[in-house]
Picture 1 (cartoon, each protein chain N blue to C red):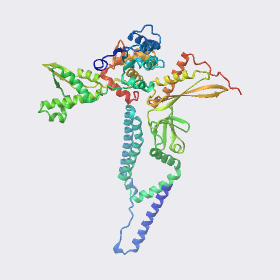
Picture 2: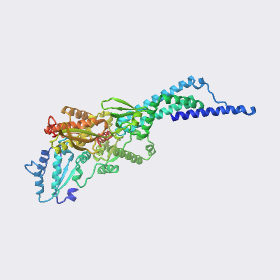
Picture 3: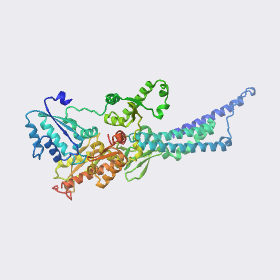
Picture 4: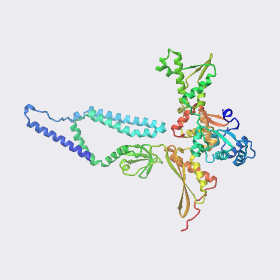
Length: 298
Length: 305
């Protein structure tokens, strides 16, 4: 939409930060390759190159949460970015994306909002929006939906009242399903989409059967120890962390970090990829609620 | 003491009215005898074996119920950090209510003595207790004042009489606090009511922590302040909804100029108070050592007398 409707005539440069880039050399190298600038040793090289452009450009920087590490020396890349943004705003229109809790943290400690004129939050949609996002995607297929009831719903009076009318039953079950989905996902469409796909029980004769889902109860996973909770909070703030990065964030040894992350991975709370460990989307909201109850995320 | 004397005078006036009634009944005509005999309940009937056993059962039941409710609320408080302090505050109130109901059932429901007996016994007990238990009564009244006035609540960190710690219980006679070295200190309520109490968190989960670093006078203050600020904001225990402030003061110790760096930050849970202080101090010292900004000894310049 941005390319087709708003920035029709401007050049757009997309920079996606895929891994932790908290050192100044790393961000200079990233910007050097993105803007095709050679021999970049200092932020001034980037500034001069961008200010020398003949026409204004748009830079879309995705993944701001990867540009810092919660460590005394982990803000060098961000400091360089603020300098570049403030000195090139005459020639560059900067757009950036960031995960919510990293944004809130950076706003409290660095006042990140002061570097931008407009801030939009897109992760807290209303219940109705979640339902319409999922149903709009489904309507592109030609399959019908059949919602199943769980044991407690079947015993409820509201369900029994509607048994004579199959259409009313389906409307009622659909309403309950999306209420529970909105409650668990708290407006997050990506988590809602994952849970929707996991709710598909079977597909036959052009009908998709949706079974009620049970949220994972993480309280039983014995993750109430403070060390574990702080590890989860660190991953929430950074999105993805490697073992060595967790050492720096929590001032632990490599062995301690590895044990903490491996234990959480074995319980299904974390998923490991090449870029590091990140929270399983299925337990994301429950973990957040737990951390907020303990005042660790605030 | 006022309460004791008023009970005594009430008992005496009750007896006076009885003796007056006796005199009146002696004067009236025998055909209009008004039965003004006071109710004299035999001791054995008043404190029968059945009543004693029933009273014990009620008191034991009240004791067990009290312990059970305290245990349940304690467990609930530990699982709900944001409501922990509120739930713990309810416990002393529930104790008082439960024991009051139990005593009412025993006295009013089981023993059920006549009013005159209550007044007479109360007067006697009041006089004896009043003289013998002045200090205890002061503490009990102090306990009521603490519960009603609420200078602090269960879960608050307070300093009184040289003791600093978390309030774990507010009883009728005393208040218990646990110090940082895990000692349980029992402070009589009368002492609390009559002295100043310093409250660190006033019912909130967070409280301010101050970490102090002493540096030589020729240290680069800007660099050190930046390191100190980043050490505070990157600590896992810090509460960032309240500000982190770094203040520098100049002091003279043993004729040497010293910079006293104070890092004021809030901890996300009062139970991590000293962990936050320790972590901030460690992070600052580690970084200053890495940058070789911290000499092995502090004195650099001497003040000329």
